[in-house]
Picture 1 (tube, rainbow, N blue to C red):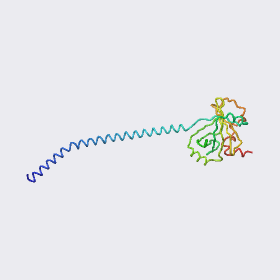
Picture 2 (picture 1 turned 30 degrees about the vertical axis):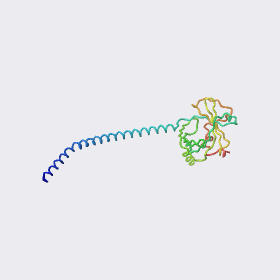
Picture 3 (picture 1 turned 135 degrees about the horizontal axis):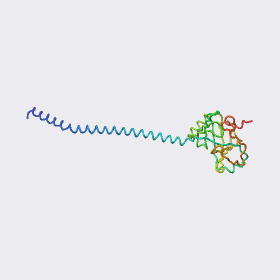
Picture 4 (picture 1 turned 45 degrees about the horizontal axis):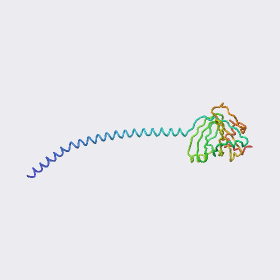
Length: 225
């Protein structure tokens, strides 16, 4: 077989190879197209799942925030305390440090640390029998940092809890610059709720601003004439 015939034979075989390869190539191209379409759909589906997850996370964080926030109206009466007979009734106590970031006639912003292990940020309206109170739990380190930014003096006191029927009296025994001052507080369900006053309850000071903790931060009890 001469060279021309051999070359022609190889060319025919090459043509057959090209023709035979067209079908699998076309099939593979079709498969790739389908896969790309599936992948694209999968990416869209993944993006939608991710968007839904972000909504779930936002909803969870909102609920967590709600759990940490206590909002409502505080209704309480306050009294001076006579003697020490109340001490034998105390069922528990808490060491409190607190200070104010803002103090004026409309609102106060308070930082409180209880037993050096829990901190709260509280916003209250002006002192009176019924007032708005918003309380938000914060990390203890943030509480310590905010106390350092306080206006006026910090207040130190020990709070005792005294169960009394369906209610609980809280007795604040002040220390530091307010040493010697002892105040009883009781929270009520409504403004006209009747309470029986124990014998160790003295003068009522509800609504008297100079006995408020905010006033004591500005003018401690030890500076009173």
